[in-house]
Length: 179
Image (cartoon, rainbow, N blue to C red; front, side, top):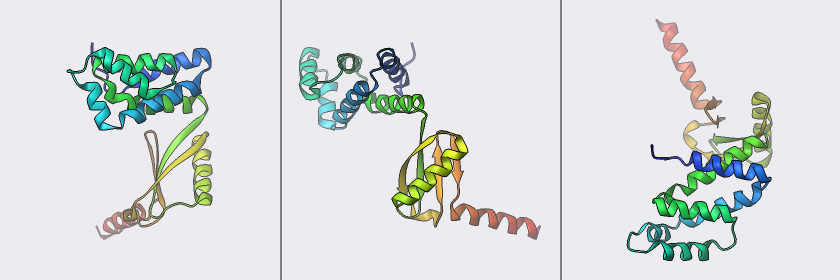
């Protein structure tokens, strides 16, 4: 059987369980807790240590996670047992993508030369939403090298409205005219 590297199948299974019981938020919070806990390298190394017996890992994990969805705890224990707890962050992200899709929301990663204010975020979100006919939530970042404008990535779609790209296009056209 091939190894699961991205966590998509685990996220899909968790989403299907949440869908059956209309229990999206509980799963979302539980998977987030697991992913945040695994961000601590020392704790993750402890869970991955072959010297620590599984029962001790189980007790440690239960104590650190506190109250979470029982099936999410079972998932975390399964991942610890299989030595795959490191993909918990991917599982959370994939679950979030599935949940957003179910709710009709798309996430766009928008890169701009300067930090966006709230009005700019709303304008870009609205325009991107018109293009793909869905509600858009923006995760923004800055990159001064794009000079101005923005670059938006929605899943596999790239919308490059940066000044840098416009300058590159202008340069290509000028070179073509010279020929």
